[in-house]
Amino acid sequence: MSNYSCSRREFVSRVMCGVGASALGSLSFGAEQKSGAEQKFPPMRVITKGPRHHWFGYYDKLQFDPTSRYVLGMEVAFEHRSPRADDVIKIGMVDLEDGDRWIELGESTAWNWQQGCMLQWLPGSASEIIWNDRQDGQFVSRILDLKSGKGRTIPSPIYSVSPDGKTAVTPDFRRIQDVRPGYGYPGFPDPNFKDLAPQDSGIFRVDLETGKSTLILSLEEISQTGTIPKNQKDIKHYFNHLLFSPDGSRFITLHRWQYPNGKRLSRMVTARPDGSDVRVVIDNGFVSHFIWRDPEHILAQSKATADSPSWGDFLVKDETGAELKEVGKGVLDNGGHLTYLPGNEWILNDTYPKGKERMQTPHLYHVASGKRIDLGHFHSPKLYTGEWRVDTHPRYSPNSRYVCIDSPYQDQGRQLHLIDISEITGAS
Image (tube, rainbow, N blue to C red; front, side, top):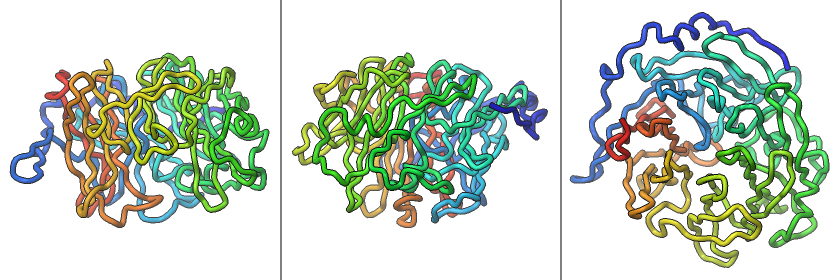
């Protein structure tokens, strides 16, 4: 682990201490969005602007700081092509209490369109952020304290960070880039390219205090665990999508395997942070987005059985071969990106582009009543498809007042949009 200096140290420190801040009341949200003659949506405003493009990425990361004032984001000068190893993105944040001012914090050359560079507020800290980068021929992660301006480098990339901010788990991004470009990082080829289930690649535990990285679950091990649907000798195994439980006692990952024709299937697996007590929770081969409801339950998109014609949102207990209980059938979208708002009263979700107008619809689902409230319709032009599509990936603020999404805006490309949901949630 090494230290690095922050050129914006004094400026960022002043910002985090509140110098030059103005009241939130001086900002205004745009008029309510309307679809048709009657439908109304919560107030929304775009908090970044062109000519550069801004986005955050995945839905299960901490985009807002603990006070809900600062909103992290990334900035790039181009769209509509795969990133190259030397393409630089800027790391920054928006100050919601100072005219949505963009504050530059750093940069990265280890990123993709769907998940960015794993930028997030470090859990358990009021002023530290973390993101992935590359240095000296390897992927690394940077931790920056915005109050002191001091930074340090961890000699490993990260994916999910434990709630106490001391530990991370990460897959092999070189392997992911090989099997599914758009979720890995370009530049370093997979050294196990020809190995279908290598014993020295898989999930690594990263100590964010010492920088030590340890392989805790190998691809060879998971390929021999439980029953793999439609198994055959030439499938290529990999891990993607990791997430710690709310108490840090376990983490989820998707064990995926790719067939020679490019198709893939998945199992949802959980384990302890040291890689022990591996459980194959959903084993039918069909599982996608997920979120922890609490340390013992997971909401996941899957099929009821491998032969089911359609997908659904299922609540399962964290146990091997868990029973799938569908939530919000026909109301909660079965293909979006799921999170629970604090208190678990509401589920936040979205949709992929639908209809001729290619509208994406973030929405809230009230668990007790089964009612869905749409938060807006956001047009996604056809140019935004495949690897460089813009999923809205809704993220909530800690005070449950705001939802932030990524979406193309007019002729300015992808930008951050802020939706005020306080009248729905009762947040103050």
